[in-house]
Every structure is written in C-alpha cells, then in structure tokens.
Length: 346
Image (cartoon, rainbow, N blue to C red; front, side):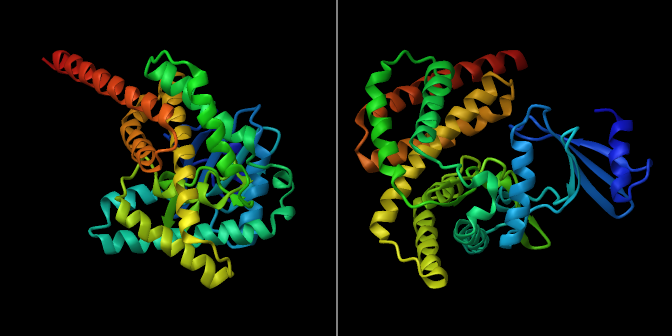
C-alpha cells in the first residue's frame, strides 16, 4: 500500500495529508499495520489480505465484544472493498511487556493477572450467553475436528519438519484422539482462541483485547491455558494454581457457576497440552514457512510447558516419548547453531 492510498482513507477520520505514517512490525499475522499520528491524534490502519476470510469476522466480533463490555479497539472507518480498517491506537504496552518491564514482585504480577482473568471471564460468560447475537459465531464450534487439526499441525510442522523426526504417526494418533475426546464434551462459551500476552494490551490502566477474529464457541479452560501456559511468559506452577483457583472462585462468586476444582484442574491440564501443541506447530510454521525466525526463541518454553504437563498426567506415554526425542533434537540443533554463530562472530 502506498502513501497516497493511506491518505485517502485518513480523510474519513480527520487526519490531513501531513499525518505521519509508520508501519508497525507485527508477529505472525499476514495483515499489515500502520500507525497514523498527527498532533495528539493517533490511529492504526489495518491492511487485510484481499482473500482474508477473517476480515468480516473481525468487524462483527469487535462490535459484539464492545456490546458485551470488553475493551476492544474502537473502529473508526471500514473500506470493505479494499479490506481496510482504521481503528483506535491502543499503544504498544502488551501484557508481556508489562510483566517483563514493570512488575517487580509476585504481588504486582498476581494483581495484573487477576485483572486479565476478570476480563476473560466477562468475555467468556457474558459473551457466551449472548453468542447468538454474533452471526459469525452461531455455528462456529471448536469441535473434535478443530482439536485434531491443531494436533496434526503440531505433528507436521514441529515434530516432522522442525525437529526432523521420523515417527510412526499411528503411535500418537490414538493419544491425540484420546486428548480431543476429553475436551470435546465440555460446555461451550465464547472462546478467544489466542488469548496470550501479546494479544492483551494495557491502555489507561485498563485491559484491552485484540486479535479476536479467530474466536469460536468453545470450552472455558482453553483460553485460560493460553494465558497461563503462554510461551512468551514463564509462570511457576504455584502461581498458576493460585490463578486457576481465583478463576474458579470468580466464576462462582459473580456468575454462580460452580465447577468442581479437581475436575477443572484436570481439564486445564488437557487444555494446556492441546494449546501447547498448537503453539509449537504455529512457531514452527512461522519460522520455517514464513521465515519469521524470531518465533524460534519461544519454542523451548512451549516445549517445557508441554513436557511438564505430560509428566503430570502420565496418560500419554507415546506422545511423551516423542516429545522427549524432540527435546534432544532441539538441544543438539541449538548447540550446532551456537557453535556456528560463534564461528561467524570470530
């Protein structure tokens, strides 16, 4: 997109042709983002792929979540023909940056996570009750096939392509089927589907949510696992368990939803397995196929979460064996990479 095309869009929101335009480098998205600044005004322009099926969903879900009371970007202007969206600038303070740069102790970390969890619950429960008001989500269920798509993604891009493992797929297919069956019967609510620290922003001390265009009707534990088993942030088990308990207490206190804690902790473990396989598949795909090598740095943490959870459940021995092999492969590959980098520096 050239400057003239951007300026044509800006006239709808009070910016002049003298506004500063700067491309924002983003993560895994295929979309392009531009920050528009003039005097004290700023906005973000999103350029979507012409064939992006999520474009219309983004607009509809943004409107739906705003109605539910969730802090999403205010949309100023939409060009449906050119697939452009001009929206509120939420800034750059993600939850990830806030945790790494601002939070100095466990008390501050716990406080911000509780704020995020409060927002998550509102989105899940109130959004779930009103889900039929959002046309694009009426029939969009996170079902067995969706669970299996994620684990196939993990097998293909992480185990086979990234790690170079030659595996007998039937060895782990049965266990992935077993994992999907443990999750597929859970009650359905609003599910963000990518509720992690880079998609949660803080503006004016309030929680704001982005990248919700891939939302589904799905189980509660998946988004919570995405938050607390987030590969961008390392959370110790003790804090993780305290936050799960806070989540359950809040569900009961404010929404009269009483879930057996033992059962939910088990479901959370299964959802964490599911989510971390998806993350490893995504990081591998982005590194290998889209050449976004920055995502390689997050693979060890996602792998650590996956391995820890497998060791807790003891229910997936074949997958545990394959993941152990992948860890050895990654260690070897990282050692080779370090040696090669050191030689290049010399």
